[in-house]
Amino acid sequence: MKNSLQTIFRPFLRHITILAVASVILFACDGDDTGPSDPYGYYPTAVGHYIVYQVDQEVYSTGQTQPAVSKWQEKDEIDRIASDSAGIVTYIVARSTRSSSSDYWQKVKEYTIQKYPDKLLTNIDNLPFLSLTFPIDSRTTWNGNSYNSLDKQQCFYESVNKPAQVNDQSFADVLTVVERFDTSIINRYVTVKQYGRGVGLISDDQTAFEFCQNDECIGSKKIESGSHKSRKILEFGSR
Image (cartoon, rainbow, N blue to C red):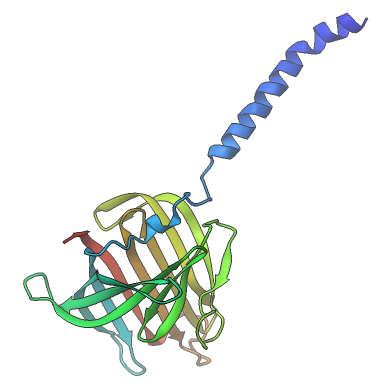
């Protein structure tokens, strides 16, 4: 009797086993939300590495029907390296701007990047910000303002190891970081950055809108004031 039952159910057991194995494989391959073994690859720090961006900005003012629009280009280039007595390495980045590709670059500021085993800090205009935390995982959240006195700003990895396109350039391995996502009926504050592996920051989109709050227009998302700024990569390389 036992052998008869085994004969009857053997095909069903075989199918169940195959389905179980297939499910495990699909689950494992359905998007890798864990970062690479070398997370620093999303933020190259070799001296001479540079990225050129197209910057577009719209500024909305109360009483104005149209925003003030401005466009320019920025170049971030790692200029030199310094280290302190504790062995913490600081990378100094020079930022230059120009109105268009036919103009000369003008250096406007420097900012720093510090790499730690568990994080990456950027300091722009004397405001340290926790840009990335390691290891990279889609379940990780952190306070970007942990190292300054500003209000808590929850950041998280929206996607890891995903392809993305910025303008006409395609990137195979991109890390998307949401640095801020505060939305309501009266405002919208959203900052999303993308980092390309082996490249660095490839896009930076910042929205800070205050919507109309009068009885006649509340809920319409009519922009009362605020700004929208985007930085998108044009080229990168090493001098």
